Image (cartoon, rainbow, N blue to C red; front, top):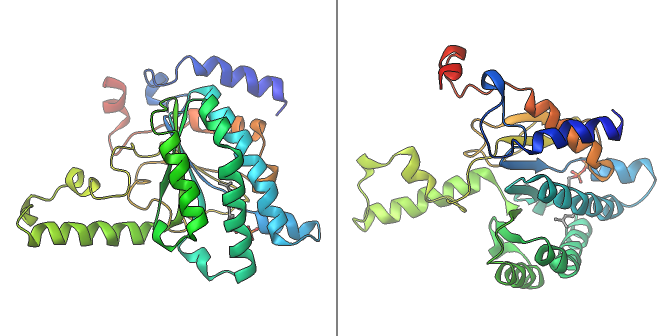
Length: 266
Ligand code: FPP
């Protein structure tokens, strides 16, 4: 798809951001919350006979492009799967390289966040991260805490099952202390024990590199997300490819378990 075509298609949809649903129960043109599994960095590097860290380094460039584009289009929440609980088992050299990359980018991108009114938030078991990464995350979270244009959520040392186990543990403790009644636990009250209870569920999940798994990402929150798979390896993910994914999303029919007739009446 040419950039002009996708530009104008998306541009005409921007006006609908956060507004009413598209015709006949179609998805909103611009999703309120986009979540991304950035996959394919290793393969990108391998194809170029480069070390894997070069794939991650080039992947970081795609992150910047995407963040700027989401902000420009009016996406309110963007969650990026930057490092999973399973990724700790990768070779030491790659884990160390990724941690250094996180520190570098958190350092260099603070101005971009401030200038674009973006709040940075981390989700995951951050206690496992090296102090340099933790400190930099904390610094950027604090410095951007009052920003309200977009929340950029970095899932680092994150696992969906881990998040659910932590939530169950906190709830069990609260029940033991007599603060909650197990019989009164609901989906809403359970959700309040997750990492970021104020963040609405993703509307759109994009996974790159043609992989079709959820890989332990946001297991609770993705219940009704539309999934769009991109064939592109993450370091090659461009604005045009993002627009293509948004256009696929805009054409989806979201029924949330209702019938088409109910959706049309709503
Ligand atoms: C998956 O590709 C990617 C990761 C595990 C790391 C994602 C990290 C970045 C894009 C770096 C920069 C991020 C920020 C937030 C500055 P893979 O290594 O599993 O690829 P493969 O499946 O081709 O091996």
